[in-house]
Image: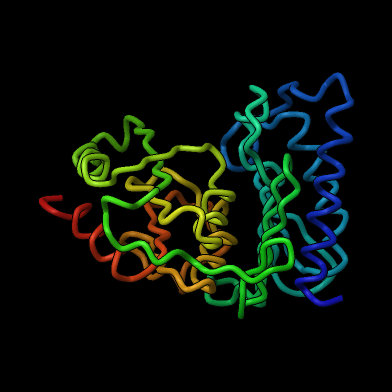
Length: 266
């Protein structure tokens, strides 16, 4: 089975598992704190176990949002977030996804395939390194270049550790006209790759790299621009549980404008 077929099969199975978990009275129960630091809900664990079962015979290492690093029986690395948007799910907000990226090595440049499925609507985004498909049809990033026309998903949350970046965040909020904060960055980035959003911006080092691997890969392949602030993205280690500031932008022209705003008097 090739890697894209494996991802597609696994994501469809993941959505089925998510719907099965809904029937269990424990669906929204908290279980533990996961590898990524967030609380693991019953549905997170249920979908994760299903995905791992599908992948473990085909890849050598699996990094999951909940359990961390799991050994497989094949070759390569799979990065998975079983339910991105767990808080949305717990509050019945219909915006969440499962996402998978597969790499032949341990750096971002080694990613060869990725996919994300909207667990509510069933939309399936797939990328084989040459093109991005949405429900089987090729998609590209948008052509928007004017900040007055941009629709951007922006991670607006600040932690105590990141208060020093408040000016950076304020400058972005002042400059981008249409702002969204949807709560599931796997879908946010897939939407950028598909041209629905023009940008995903995390202006402070708060989001986890493992949550973004597949989405950033799709944006890049679809014609967009991706950058992890202060890092060489292609050399970033896939198994590092690192929090980052990141840009996933539709094109280089808009990326230059947004980056200049972020870094002005930073």
